[in-house]
Image (cartoon, rainbow, N blue to C red; front, side, top):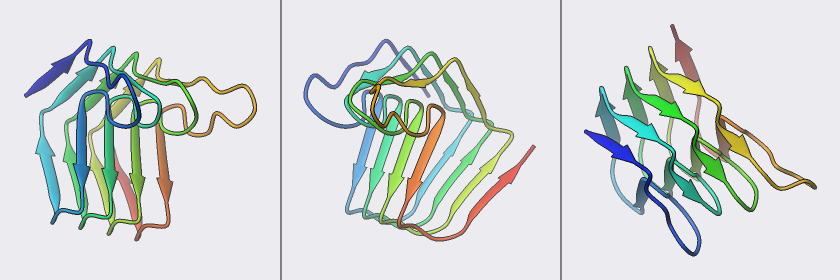
Length: 113
């Protein structure tokens, strides 16, 4: 699956929003030029484990604060295999945390290749 030039006009997850769900598993998914206040490409909140394999985030932007490419909050473990973040930004000049990825109050984070 691919998400390109997607925008959440008010709030989270320009490309994809997952809230209060079970586990999230994506393979070969791309997010390009997606924009939102938080989690420009993908926003996951209060869900189970998050697993991404061969995913890519390119030129995604969080306009207000955290997670230009991806935001994960209050969820389970986060596992990324062969996932890339390129030219992603968190634009807020005061905080602007996690241009590529922002993980808050979640389980273990594992990055592989």
